[in-house]
Length: 105
Image 1 (cartoon, rainbow, N blue to C red):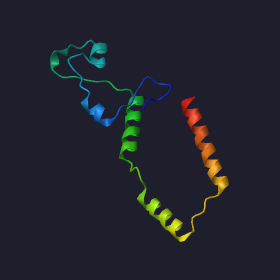
Image 2: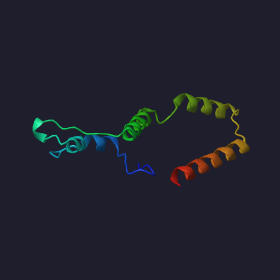
Image 3: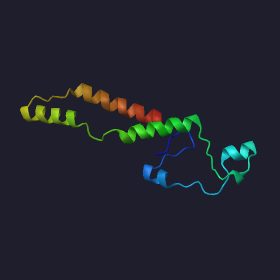
Image 4: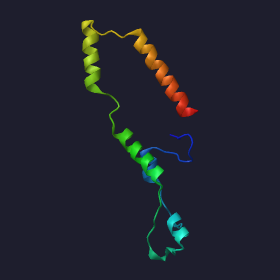
């Protein structure tokens, strides 16, 4: 997923887990002038990147299907009690279109 307005790309967790640092100096080491002879690698991550990583973890941990809601709606449909206001539906569709256009714009 690419986040507009930044140069940061989030790849799938499986891909992130496979990324290796390698033998290069880290950003923190090169800025502080430290040598790589200590045998440890360090990576400096911005607070924005940390926030993005936390948001990604929360989204990945959330269930794809809200089973309680699905069951409730199935029961209402089976009983013939499920009705959707066309005005509410149109309003939600427009809200989603506006939200997406702001995000992508």
